[in-house]
Image 1 (cartoon, rainbow, N blue to C red):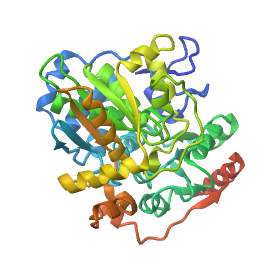
Image 2: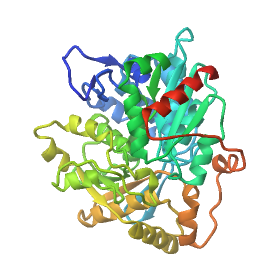
Image 3: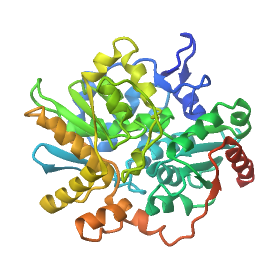
Image 4: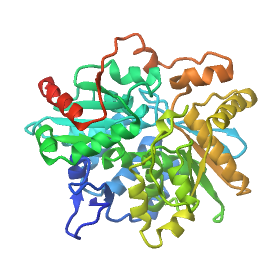
Length: 443
């Protein structure tokens, strides 16, 4: 796979997947994107219906990565990373939940983080200096990355999160591990955490001194495996009629998950798929899709906290993929946006529980609202909501609406009583530099 930067550069400026995996961000400050996205061969597409989710994922990974990664290495990484189910269940007529929360930390980010961790472990040269992974999180990324990389040799992890703005159960998943994982609580918002990561990568001396790389969706190694479950759902539900439509509604904050879906649409034979960018009141991208321009702003705090992002990084990838000139028109033919208030989100959770006995978290509820709205305008279409987190991770919001206690899954239960440790810093790079200096002694 040849990768280029969203900031352009000459035609000679290309990187391999391995280079991009360990760099995290392009040297010019841009994000890595595939130089081209050829379609999945027909011979591969015809085999998909008879395969399991990991087998379908291997087909997708082999197509996207080409011959850069040995097939045995790739297959082993996928089988080890994707050792949990991805159920697809119909909850309303023509509406399905793709349950992405059955991994070890009960969030969709387990898919990308575990694949990335196994790729790094397979490709890391023990003779190289230790790596330091920076991961900004608004909730689920922190737990997924911390768990995936915990105690891997040669790798340190710093998880930056906004102090007091992630759920207690999410916080427990990355502040209780210790070892090579350091939790950094930032006095500010997720946008501040993300800004600190960008500033760190923009400092060449700091990046070199600590061998910095990322594990957010800005890292192509985290992003590409998220295409796997789109292909899985598409294979299960792809319309038989050529003029039918399958709509994916994606709860969106930093827009990595949606970017992966758009990559899957172009390269994995999903040409009929349409997408809904479902957000809370942080509606920067829906406003853009409605013709009001792209205007990043300070994020607003909501009950769907992982989507409280006012300046989504991956929007640059989306714009690059669709082109600067004809991009708006082509993008709007594939993607619509919607935003929903906390009140509407609560009503959705309450309504689905009382009508169907199905509990969902606030982010999935936003996705369901977006999908229902889109399907009302597309009679005969079918839809998939990406269920991004186990509802028990947001018990303080969900349980008052259902009136019942939610079963606590094992990945959460086993960490709740452990002592939590984090380092509190202000939203300035100087504080992060001090933390990184103290982490040198970990390995």
